[in-house]
Image (cartoon, rainbow, N blue to C red):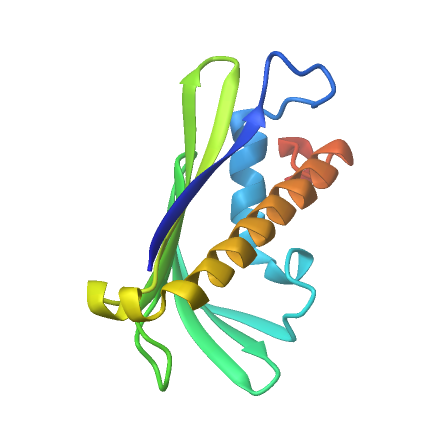
Amino acid sequence: MKFEHLIEINDPLNPLIDPLTREQLWRGLVLRADSPKLFMPHLDECTIDQRDSGSFRRTLRYGELVVVDRVVLTPLEQVRYEVAAQGEITQSSLTMTIEAPNAQQLYVRFKYDDGHDAATDAANAMYDEFRKSAYKEADIDTIRVLRELAAQGRLDASYLN
């Protein structure tokens, strides 16, 4: 399943939405990778190791399910989650890219790739529609949490230093 969608962050025509800066949005996306329990309450545990310049490895535990992934950071542009094949889990990825078509607008493009070929995707089409819907809802929720954190000042540079 290959799937992507955009979530608008700043809409200059909607005064009811508090705009975020690119830096606040970036810090929020990194926080989601670094402290995922803030965004996924069903996550039991996250351990981070193997930090190096621009990436780190995480071990996530959801009950009995354990997933190891690598997070790759492209500052102020992209957060990429890479899951290598492990046990019954196939190789997959999620990429969150900040897009700014102009100075007033910001978007996040969420791009999923579960590593399956076209034949598998066709066989799983009905199931994948449910997954797409769940992913989109989770992404909307991520942006909701980011907005709450920004409103509390927790995505400001001064808060993080």
